[in-house]
Length: 279
Image 1 (cartoon, rainbow, N blue to C red):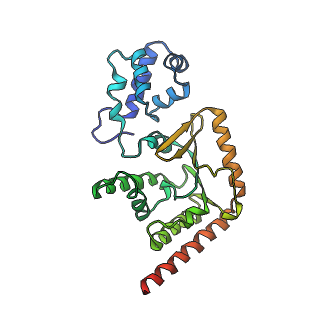
Image 2: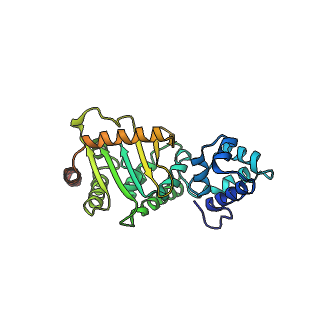
Image 3: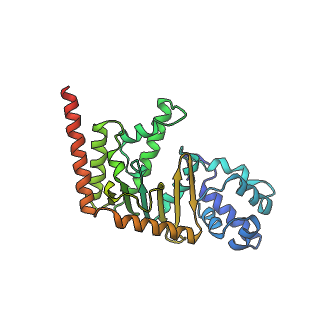
């Protein structure tokens, strides 16, 4: 993503890659074979959707950049402060026309309220100053602006019931957070489904998963663990992730029952907060 006063944005970076590739008389497939990258990967970089890692950039330089352009200008592409393992997924997220996410324990970033995000981002390591935390929260809230457009992207969230029950920031924060999700769901801006505890084991219990579709490129999957994240582009792997998501979605509560559960749990948190105020 571009940043203010940044002389080389991801779009311009991609345009330069395309210009040099075409000047060398190479197709995306041919360049990919020479630099050990998939054609899809090359296409995403040229479209400004993906940030190559250092080794990718060095291989591009060996093939197309005697001036070491691709490695030298790599740091200029980092326009937002997010975890390094999530940086590529963030780029994809901003371009997706459809997103489906499964969250096992915490509210997904796109749905987090300011207070909830502050608690989550402030609990990590290393410790963050007030200014650092403020910047991180602002970045997270900025991500949610993709929901300002009612029609695109299409978004579906599958939440484990643990997301509703894990108390982050206290009952007042949780009450506001769950009501925020329920409001988005009731407005039909998003679809939200809850996987109840009663389901037991299910297809997605291994961890967070995000599926994304694009207008002119193949879909991808992104899986996240502790201080790690992985983007999957291989069609067979993406299809497998889509199948797992569909299986888990089939075990979830309906949209209306999920909204009812969100409201009920939010009300429980409200009553808990009121009792605490009386003590």
